View 1 (cartoon, rainbow, N blue to C red):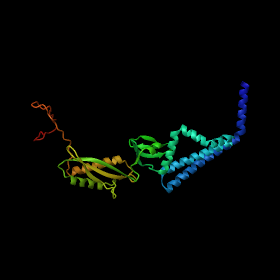
View 2: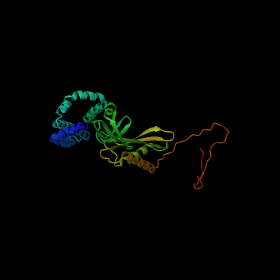
View 3: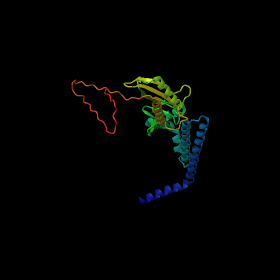
Length: 303
């Protein structure tokens, strides 16, 4: 048993030594094909970026070219080390293998084809704000199997490409414009027309807000609340020019509008609460507490 083991090991070692030139040459060819894959994929990506400036498509095609050259390199390596029949069988059985793999890995093949269609149809680009089902964020990358989306709360979500094909996809920034809105309540006794003029004037003076034709900021009366007339303000930002946080910009806009309305003498009252007492003749179950550090009004009124 020992002699057979030693003899088998010696035969294996002699075979390795005999084929070492072929193995070295095969490895050299494999590394050459790997280098060509990297070089050509980079050149193609740069060429696509120069022609159509589409990072999503260039990345996808670059990865596809790299994969094709790598497969060719592996086949050449197998052929060089004497496994030509295996390489030929690998290529000859590609159709049958594709069918078997397609059935075994249906989702992977489906996501790959979906990624191929997404790369060429381009419903979104890198950096666009998209929404699929309940996931909203910026598109970061398109891979063979999934799409990388960075949500606004800092989560990295990898959505299967087939989901982007089957589900409705909303692109908020395809044309570089994204609209925001907020509601502010004013007193019923205020001059609403003047308040709208003040808000529009304040928004018109802000540099980060888009004021092009058709996307000017505007204000509407949204509804009549219990104690306020609610005005809804709409404004757009250009995501191509604006590099900061759009949510922070919305907060700044709301703060500036609030300050401007306060300076103009407009009131933003609190909600009116109605208290009903159903037991007649009983004392009102309400007590008033005062702080000694707060000077009371001279003529308090109870409504």
